[in-house]
Image 1 (tube, helix red, strand yellow):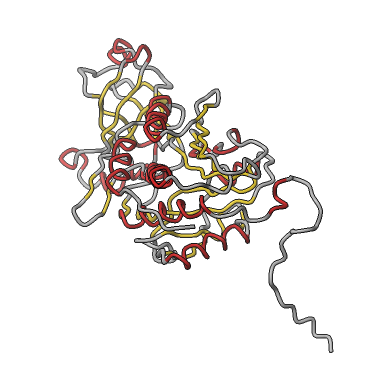
Image 2 (cartoon, helix red, strand yellow; image 1 turned 30 degrees about the vertical axis):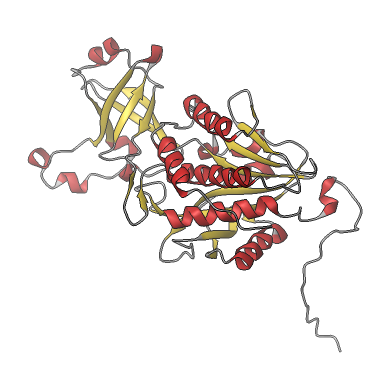
Length: 377
């Protein structure tokens, strides 16, 4: 393994392109094309599932047992639930996020026949001049939100005339901003920042002409935010998979705000002991800033892969996000650290030779280094 240069300008440029491409779960066709174009520009072959999940491949000296690095390109969003008599629409959320972070958001409604309408998500009681202190006492929930559409629209009939229907998708503006000192503020950093880091790592490998020891699949899923994730894009040769997603900055968490975070467990259970520590060892050896963390209310593509019956080793590498699923912020140093770690992991040997086969003998099966005090003399 050798340290590779990560093209930070490319990372930022791709991230902005992804953030400015709306892709709530269920409406991901356009961003699939965007990611495919980036793969084509890097000279990385790929194929698509029926619904558009992407499986790209960086060839190694051996094709099996191969590995995968995975991120998701779908985001949170909303869907029209009801057309209202006042010419506005109520919504249901896509994915799991709090209504308090939807309040005030600019958005786009996507209707049949390619029609789109701009609007703003507002609480039902939005004016202090009308409702006084009631604007502060109204509960924050999706039932108390509506979309004010930027059209001459004041009745149910007006909505129907515009061609707005129940079930129309609503995307939330990302509104990205990168400051001079490296902070990136935007919605939907989860997981477009992770996807940008994966692509930047792949570019580093391609630019340097590095020979990988085994095939490495780059997987991009389209329904992680609703729990489906990697359940439909893997194949049987994959022995180990690293999921890339956001880590959470909070007082009781241990996520590295300016480095990579290796997740030891999320709500689906512990990640693979050996693969996780392989990543930690790479960070230590190459001086990559990192921490370990445990997430209580969190799941990733790795969980859906295991739940679908895949017998693979999984790990989770995170970039930092403050205000996850809300007003999100990360730092370019964290994305660089993740990209560097991934570029080194791609160069590492498979964790165990026996993983080439799903079922095999005990030879080369790992043994955790533990000492037990049984109390015996």
